[in-house]
Amino acid sequence: MLRTKLLVLLLLLSIGAFAQSGIAGACRNGGSYPNCIGGEVVFTGSNYPVIVHITVTNSSGNAIDDGDYRTADGILTFTENLSFADTYTISISGHPVLTVTTS
Image 1: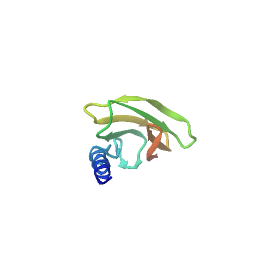
Image 2: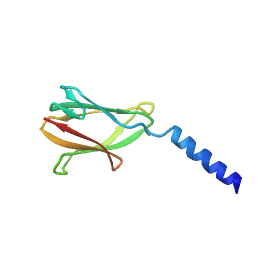
Image 3: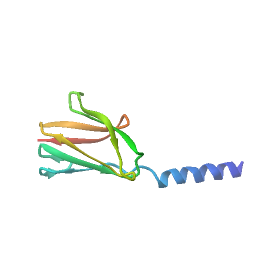
Image 4: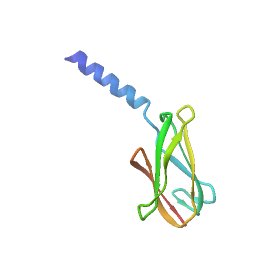
């Protein structure tokens, strides 16, 4: 039983060591993330699989982007044009991870 617990602990530690990083955002047209001036917002993160599903919704819940993105060596980078003043939610594989407000 002790051996099984040890194996489970090692497995959990190894998963944690290679977990996905949080996604970070940067305002390309000015502002201080997460409050950006309308326009392009760049998102980056690491340790992602080759294909990542991204959904971006506005405050009305309408999807303005809903597609698969390809990573490069686990690095996820994508740019969204969030030109209209609104609050947007960025979800990865169906899980909300960020909120960005543009003006």
